[in-house]
Length: 248
Ligand code: BEZ
Image (cartoon, rainbow, N blue to C red; front, side, top):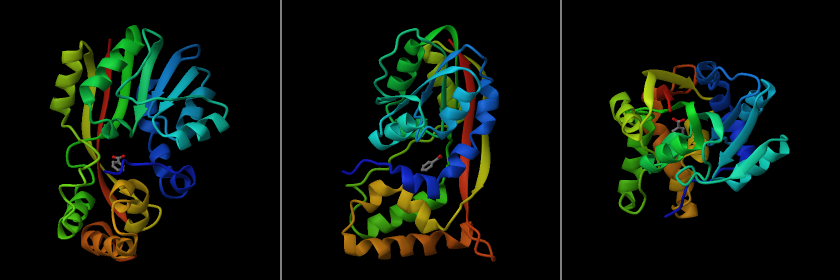
């Protein structure tokens, strides 16, 4: 089974909107000068750098070697680390995460690691996909995989909780949930559905016979077109967000 992998160049072209749309959750974080903050799932570090520029000390953690190299190239303290096995103890004033937690399916291990990483009174502020996120894409992908007999072999790489589910997880961990909001955020894409799939569903594409990839992409793109593409050819994906702030 192929795991999702990331390529910084491809990310720059097809996914910069993820960073740009991270400003809302950054406002909720409200980083203060002198604070020590962990950016969990820091990606290529572009949003992490914005935090660092707000005069706080930042560590960026990500499981992708390519992303960590990009973060280091930006002068950041990037650590190659799985978010399901964080190794910090009472170090941080805050743990921040944008568009990353839905890739970490062992959610209990994540909340445990974040809780341990925070100083007492520290905050966990994050935004992730919520229930129903990119449902149109996912349904079309699953149908195309089923047609090829690959449904069992290729599991969905993400999980998208409701506010209740994630709130319960945080509370069970010992956090006090101060704010949690679930909202739809239709998201304009920089290119077409194929480009989105190429970047965000690599774990599917890489399991296919290479000769079948163009057909798979075409099939999924045409299946989602009625819902996601307007008459002028502009694509908008059906993102759903879960944004929260919880205190240790
Ligand atoms: C998200 O940010 O919600 C997301 C992006 C790509 C694939 C899955 C989820």
